[in-house]
Image (cartoon, rainbow over all chains, first blue to last red; front, side, top):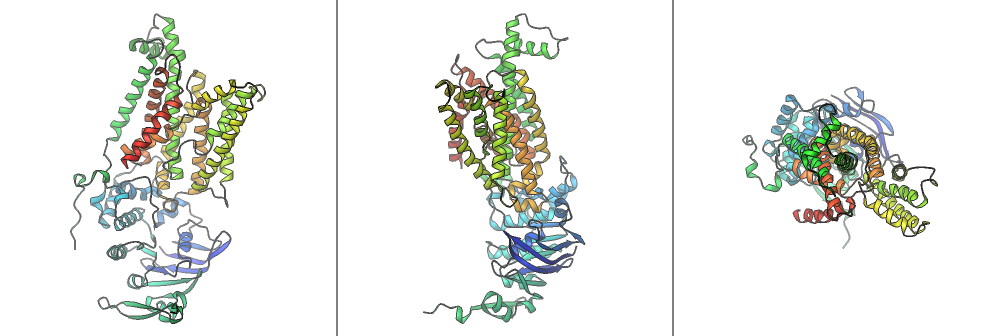
Length: 261
Length: 357
């Protein structure tokens, strides 16, 4: 399904965090949303997965306004992977993944054979099938993230939204999770901190600054020294990655940002 | 390519990593059996010991009058049917209600320390009850003790929900804080009313007894409404087990799974408040049941509400029947209010929980 965000503004406590933002993700694409902290990436994402209502503009998924759909129908189309707040309550990995079937099941409707198959497939895809009876809270960061991706998969989403999936993960798990997302083939919108990861895994990028889209396009068009200086206030030099050949950035602090000795 | 992971091997996992895979249905049947046995057992114990066969015959003769003949001694019949059975059944209903509401509230607030009284319900009910006890029912417009307690509970719930609102939202944190704050205020009001009551000393004892929670003097007429409310709300909550699970994972996750978090929380608030209000009106505030039973059950069956809710209902019922039995017998002929017994058990429970973790 195609995601169209048109002229969206999102306000929190009557302050517009996001303003006049338009973006689109065509089926099968992995699009990255990048920008410094406070630029409004998470806020924009929340408007897309229906946690915050836009003050202006619309969000269309598959041709429908997500806010005109029911919460359940929206959840049947959009799978979300966000930072999970640590919980005092414990679920097994199987139970966590099984929660993903919630938007598809009615009241008192038990899981059927198809549900069980979907859950098993999702766990296999993220390579966590040996962990089904493990307690979720005892998993490592990378393992937890994979389970959350499995939960999103079980929703059978047409759009996958990931908010900073690589935060607090070891480098191995950062690469692993993004590799996994790439193999899924689902229309994906992901926010990333690491610009090199964004360059390596996203076909297009939207650079957010102060709640506005500063620029968008292929990584080579967006991650230019000029834009990086303007938005991130650092100097960057790009060179092809020695192994993949893709765009790779190296950074230095701006001369006038350095504290004088 | 790395090989596909091997199938589950729970033996290779540390105990803290695996929740015991207890057979769910065998547990339910076990608890139901325990419940029936506890009822029959508890009904036979008291100032006058009545043997089990007589108990069964009494109950049978009332339930199936054409089939089972009444017992020879009408006193035994009266003791069982008029005095003890309503009380024991009330214990089942109240125990189930407290355990179920505690479970729902812990999920709703994502706080393992939530109990049924967290939203100031008990404090509000106390104010209503104390007004009737100290001023007399006539002054209170002929309102009975139970009704006054219920109205007090309802009022405090409305207050808490209103106070916790901010921009049309009542987050769990704000609800809990408002509840705690209001509880303190209303407890102070209760104490003040007792101090200023017309019958010095007399009012205090009655209030203390009510506050400690008691199932004494239970009558059949009192059972109808609470039973209906408990059964209805438990079924409603079981029907919403999936959204409850999702809610426990976080507001963002729940929204991503299609739950309308704000509206669901409102519904939960309404349902649990009604349940707790009805129960407090009829039995006072019996503590720890709503807090302990959900934790104990989760340790055995896990956190999935489809498994937890039926189990806490049965478990809560069994628990309170036995606790009430202890309260009735441990200091015979005097009666120890059931709330004191649960408190005495609650403290050690928490210490044990602390050591386990």
